[in-house]
Amino acid sequence: MPERIDLRAQTSEVERVFWVPLAEFTRDGAYRSEHWGEPPLDRMLHFFELEDETVWGATARIIADLLRRALG
Image (cartoon, rainbow, N blue to C red; front, side, top):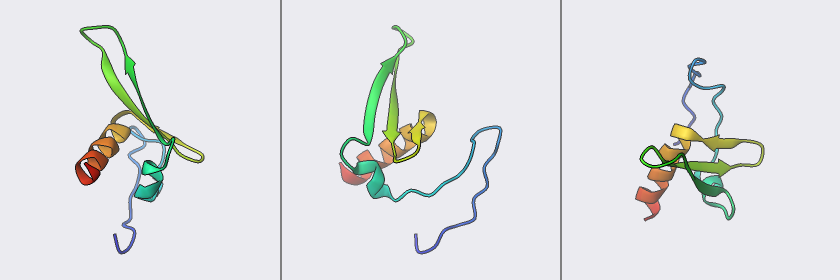
């Protein structure tokens, strides 16, 4: 994006909003996934370990899907 847009956290949903270059999500060691739960309720959870933050849950799932679609 040429410039940052004004974002505000919906505090009942997220703690805060922060900006991260997409390249940070693709660096070696940033991504991992885990299976949680027992069948038939098991599911894959995605995690991105950034310098000072862990992105996980729905946000990580959306980012993982975006990267898969963009990078193949």
